Image (cartoon, rainbow, N blue to C red):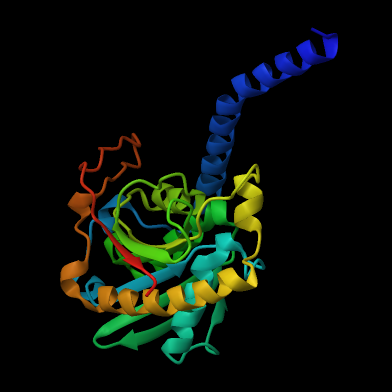
Length: 270
């Protein structure tokens, strides 16, 4: 066996050995950035998050399109694409306003008897939660009334579904929201983008753009998913109870595990 081959195998082993620790380090750094950015403004306390002013909160909801600002058309920003189409459906596409208090673009409208806040974060995906937490505080919206829209690797393109709280399942934008809101009860509209084929790295894949053929499928999915989203938002029985998720204390950050139940409603493009 040549020295080059041996060195290659040793380097591969070392890289694999450090892969998990490096992932944990990056996770800790991202969490620290979330905390630092949150400390610069008044944010919701666990007490507020438990639903104070319940009468007002029940009539106020927020829909958030997770993604990376300036990367419209990428797979990772499909949540923003859905939200933009939703705004067009509601006749508010030209009424977005930049709000420095929440580090994002906001539009407030009414849907039946609900005051609906639409939010497009202006922060990177990994710290989207800071923008969401700021908006939740400003508009006094409890987490169970915040619907997150995001891309989902574990669903093929053409499928989408509503998930009633639970873990982030590796999605950094959702994880940031869980960290910043101190709970994982937020319902999510997950839009399938599928996994990359071959040896394409996941990070390169999610930041890439859809092909024209894929975009045609996505356009149909977006239209159908918005129908489901509007029904979910206006149906008072569909709102997730805080008991279905987990909460973290500001003091000890202790988390109780979510109940082991599958509450995902999956839909497929017709």
